[in-house]
Amino acid sequence: MSTVSIKPLADRVLVEPAAAEEKTAFGIIIPDTAKEKPQKGTVVAVGAGKKDEPLTVKVGDTVLYGKYSGTEIAVEGKDYLIMRESDIFAIV
Image (cartoon, rainbow, N blue to C red; front, side):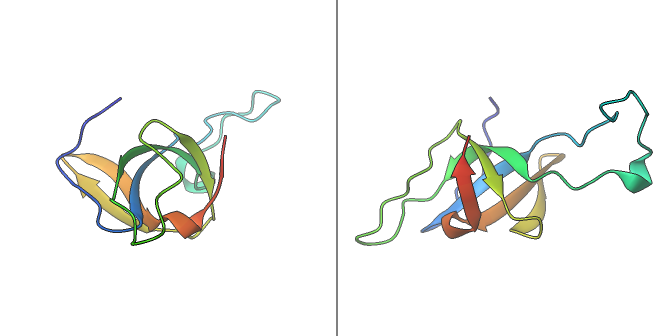
């Protein structure tokens, strides 16, 4: 688990996206241009939540989120997504 120097505010969470699949189930290698954007990742930082609305997710949770959820950011050379907790569909 990585520690980052960014602290999300309110109901936002910082997610490290899972790596895109390199091969299909049949062993065909997928080129970079055809890889699907992952919709699964690991929570690496969470905000404090809103008044009367504590956060459900916590650091270390693996979550599923929408295909176009969040904003892509780079912190210390790694790519992350910052999104509202409401953009997360499920904890896996």
